[in-house]
Image 1 (cartoon, rainbow, N blue to C red):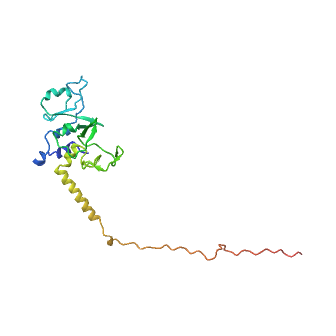
Image 2: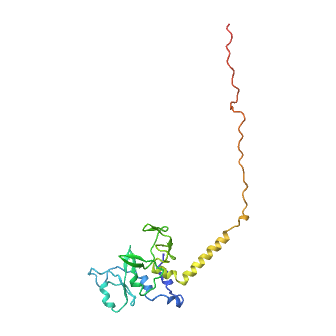
Image 3: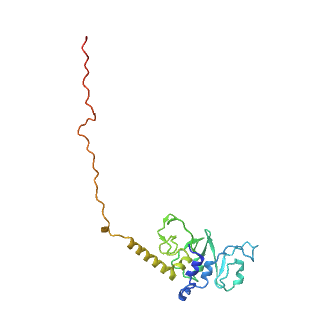
Amino acid sequence: MLTTQTIANNLGVGGPEEEENQWPPWLKPLLKEEHFFVQCDSHGDSPKNKCNMYCLDCTNVSFCPLCLEHHKDHRTIQIRRLSYHHVIRVNEIQMHLDILSVQTYVIDGAKAVFLNERPQHGRLKRVKGVRVTNACDVCSRGLVDDCFCFCSLGCKVAGTSRSFEKGREHTVMESENSSNISGVEDNDIPKPQSVNASTPQLPTSTSLRKRPRKGIPQRSPLQ
């Protein structure tokens, strides 16, 4: 599972300048934000006090819809929730970020993408009766469509980073070297000799008696 530090590293923190500039500066704080859907400190008495908004220009913390007045003329997006995970609608995020190869889901009649990786237990499962054959390149989570490579924005950031590509190539090389070292030619392995189990011979006589049968008893002559 991707940790906050892993996401930060894959977003270019401490990496080459070109990799750091690959993503907009607001993406890292957005993926690391952990206070979505908490109660707003300024509007706690309002029924709409959940912090589900985020400003791409301020990139500080999430806020509730009533705080939008403090972000006039700013680029703001709304975060939604599905199965206790944060999602964002495609029509909101695609204006600011390339979401190509990220799996989309239909939520309340609109397409959306997940922000970060979701834990998955076990092997690939069926989704709506369809057997899942494709998986995320980073976390191996099952994907509904074969045209996608990542399950979330966080996995795309991690999967397209230079460090991830180098690590995957190193893993493949180690696997191939391990196979070559452990592999042994068939000619070098001594073949076991075939041994035919001897079948015990049954006696030719069909009788299994050890002593001959007694004759007919005869009476002693009368005195």
